[in-house]
Image (cartoon, rainbow, N blue to C red; front, side, top):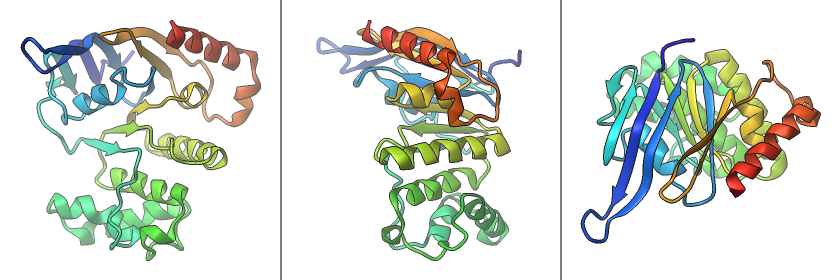
Amino acid sequence: MSAPYIEADRVRKIYNHGPAAVEALSSISFSVAPGEFVSILGPSGCGKSTLLMMVGGLETLSGGRLTVGGRPVENPSTDIGIIFQDPTLLPWKTALDNVLFPIHILKRSKAEYRSRAEDLLRMVGLQNSMGQRPHQLSGGMRQRVAICRALVYEPDILLMDEPFSALDAISRDEMNVELLRIWDKYRRTVLFVTHSIREAVFLSDRVLVMGGSPSSIVSDVRCPFPRPRDFSISDTSEFNEICSFLREKIEE
């Protein structure tokens, strides 16, 4: 087994310190190996997104220890790319310019990254849409642009916060297959928050289930299906047994 790349040790999150304090997360412990795809499941309000943002350095810890690559997480890092539920594309910029926007923010040379941005857009089937603006793109196309934007500066980790929840069922299935194809090519370490049990099992090497009040990790389940994957695995008894087990854990 590889040494953990992401490691949480008894992480806590408390809001409103003092008499009105609310402990949202308690004693969260888990690890993720380099190149592993791990999903986080749990009921609404259990703190999945909060935990994800703590890994990304956008939320502070109230206790415990959280490290990436052996270093404590204290601030946002260029080693980490974040993809939100809303693609958050700039409406006045083309698809290509949206992908290159992080390069502008990081004060790097756009000329050096332009070919990479174009290659990424071609890889996700948007070779004919590079000059289009967000309003000219479908929801799935906008999320493809958001994924390319997160990959353009070559981060080691992708944090994905319910990126496909706003899509219709067919587009969501297409994006799941697209995401696995991208992941197979680049093998980045992924933490993926979702409410969909079947999506989590289809995509992941492991699924973490959060629950309780305050919330903690109540289950860590491996998805033993070979890669590359297609939707035929969802018809197997093993796939459906894992989904049923995860559903029971969430309901508990």
